[in-house]
Amino acid sequence: MSRPMPVPRARRRPRARSLAAVLAAASVLATACGGGSTDEPGGIDISSGDHQLKLVAYAVPKVGFDEIIPAFRETPAGAEIGFSQSYGASGDQSRKVARHVPADVVNFSVEPDITRLVKAGVVDKDWKEQFPNHSIPFGSVVSFVVREGNPKGIRDWDDLLKPGVEVITPNPSSSGSAKWNLLAPFSAVSDGGSDVEAGLDYVRALVRDHIRVNPKSGREATTAFQQGQGDVLLSYENEAIFLQRQNATAPPTQRIEYITPPQTFKIENPVAIVNTTELRPQAEAFIGFLFSPEGQRVWAETGFRPVDPAIAAQTASLFPGEIDTIYTIDQLGKILGRGAGANGADLSGWSAVDTVLFGRSGSITTIYETRGAD
Image (tube, rainbow, N blue to C red; front, side):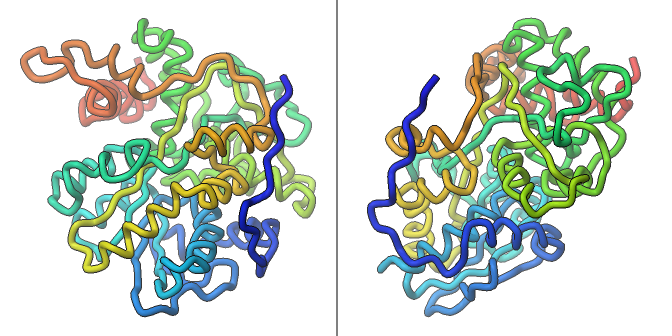
């Protein structure tokens, strides 16, 4: 199927560094992904300004923010705003902010990590209504990253259960990307949650027979795969794109290709303002830029699927592959949430999915605790 080519930016600005340089620089994340702060992504100073916004985010979108932040600082609204950043596993980052680690803007892998902050009183209850698209500025889908040439012949979910195939994916207790990675096969095998036991049987076999290491974050999982562990990395499509763009300079053992399976899951990564901030106007301006046409193009160029329909259509060729079915949290939550609440009440969305699958007594949590034992 032919796809429209991306159009040039309406306002092209001088770039101090190429996208390839940004991607290469993003591979060195020891401090940032460990939760530390950095103010010079790609070597460009972003700390100077009359106001200092603190961004706390999950690990994977650093490559996007390394482009977004300098672009925002070139606008009138962002000219006098400096940034400090902290990146790490989504759940860990959320817990830090809940303990009142300083932050102005948060961007996490999954909605429950913001819900934790609502319960802690540091994010407003109506955070979803404060920005477009329920405060989700970009997203992705779950994909397979394999070694160049795809020596194990990985094409679909059944292939991950072949004897001898080792799968790398983070631990869902700390990583939001791990939840997305598991929701994709669970939904595909269970027909969108209609056959829960079939989906859980698949996850059980995957955890018991094919997952040997449990990195804390999506970025740590990528690093493990780059170091030679595993045959397949379950990951965000944007992370797969990030890795593929490094093939030209990577040693042969680290060259990859990626496949998006015919049935996958829509990844939605929300953003919110911490209500203790003293810089709310500046935080609102920054998040507003994430949804602007220019911001949406930057997300697309760095491998993240834009949420603006017009920009998505214009940049569709950046995301090759044919997808037959994309499951969503809303769809899955409606099915899993029937009678799942207190006193048999219905739940929806992430509330349903977390309660049934990832909560303290959730079925996938139990599978991980027992390492898939029956």
